[in-house]
Image (cartoon, rainbow, N blue to C red; front, side, top):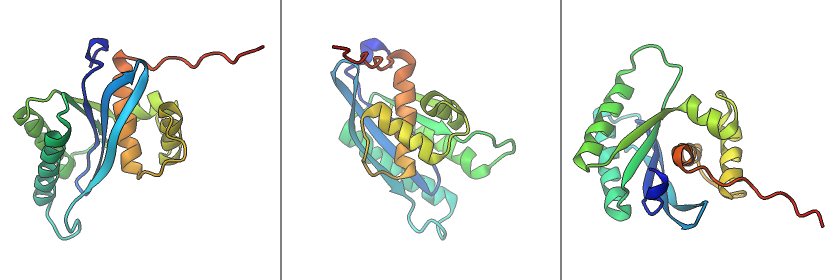
Length: 176
């Protein structure tokens, strides 16, 4: 999304084969202030009993419903980072997300978890709590209760939006 795309809706994902956090960033109502329309978690049915393909199929069906409800014009997700060997379940998930986004004609953008954590929390190995607090501060969500997957989805969405449309710097304190 670019500055000219301020009226567009973005679907942000912290995609996983057992749980996927999602967040919908709506059009900007006030310039520079992010509009978080909704967030939630998609859980796999019987995660320990269902095979990976069944979980991924369930995920894409749930994502279909989110697209129907929110009509995003782009999708962004975070990838695990620091894994230096093949992980078949994650490769299947990546492939399924790519196919799903093509089917919906949605641009799909991906960032590593370390890239997102560096940009949002200031360090690549920030803990889940540090990332959640940084997102709360940046988006004005202090005190809101969300799962770690929702905070991750909000973080990747904020990072993506900040790539081309950074949030304004806070105004200096009034010194009267």
